[in-house]
Length: 304
Image (cartoon, rainbow, N blue to C red):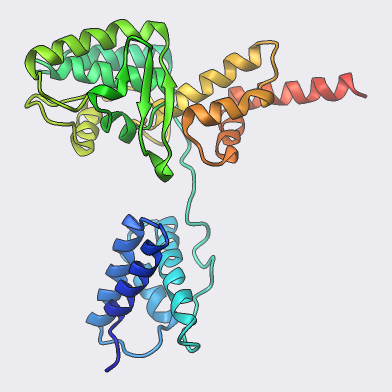
């Protein structure tokens, strides 16, 4: 009896997960494609036409999203090609690159102060303090929003001024030091949270004492960022991370120490697996890029 595409997809995912790959979002896409193929009564080797039709769904999505879907299903097809040589592979870059960095928004000190004031006016016993503290932690540490929301009480050591980020992106853990100015507001939040929800294990909690959910945080942030002036793209929570990294680089570039010699420190601080991800910050922001260009020109002049 011939296997359905769904059967093949499940075997493929089981094989790769046994090798240590989590395949969470990728797994959902592979299964979605398999169901699409079976619903269309496809039988036999996969064809590139079938994969391209599925990748172009939904029609109103961006080409980068289509490229992402095509990349995932193409990897599935490459696996099937080992046992079924008639399996077709679609062109790798038919829709262009599957990942494009969005232009970052650098928050000014005025915008940060505005957001913190608006967060302090939210309704609730704990809610205003939770959002003020959460935004403050993001801007002073450069944590990913998912990392901040996954923190437990024991992950924030205020006596030693350390935050323990456990099994974040790519299963990496790291220790993030806190600036001394962050200790007082974090301590005040902990005391207020303890009075209301002494048994809560999460560091940041909702009005009901439960762990904050990303969707809820993003919804509240959409309200907080109203009236902030921005260009083509609205500011995001992730832009606090970009702002923190950019400020570190700007401060280093103004110092006598060479930034490039310290970039590995920033990579570890941010939890990057590839240092090239950290080098991106040297070119992502006009201010940092201008300073880096001046340093290169000065270095060439000194050695000419």
